[in-house]
Length: 137
Ligand SMILES: [Zn+2]
Ligand SMILES: [Zn+2]
Ligand SMILES: [Zn+2]
Image (cartoon, rainbow, N blue to C red; front, side, top):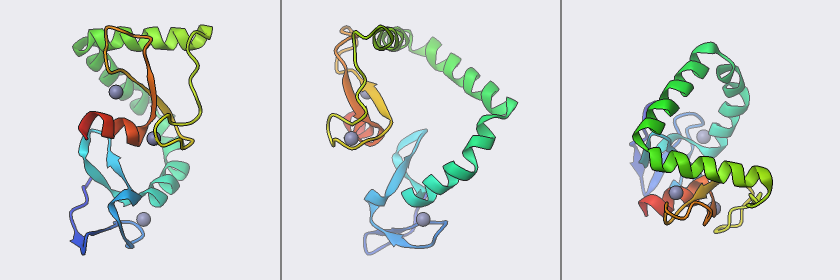
């Protein structure tokens, strides 16, 4: 995916709707946390709604996703264990995953964040944005 570069008076241009918008109207590129996406959030949402469900169901996508998560897991055995602990704890009701981010209080897809991986059940529930900030400032 191309990454946004153009900057006009502190504004970025969305490569889809061509509007000039402040940085906080863009999401992050998943693989590179410091780079913001070349689409504004509005366009990203539209894209996800229209295209993503189709891509998600393709064999190739599933295969890739499985493979990359396998690789990640083998590189991060400690974190993998922590995530499965959290998953299990949520399932049996020890931990309750909120619908809102505990930091910005927005309703979003919530991630579990750990300050200390040796305490798997000490979880901070964050939205993707706050989670990125937590790790990268
Ligand atoms: Zn846009
Ligand atoms: Zn948040
Ligand atoms: Zn985290």
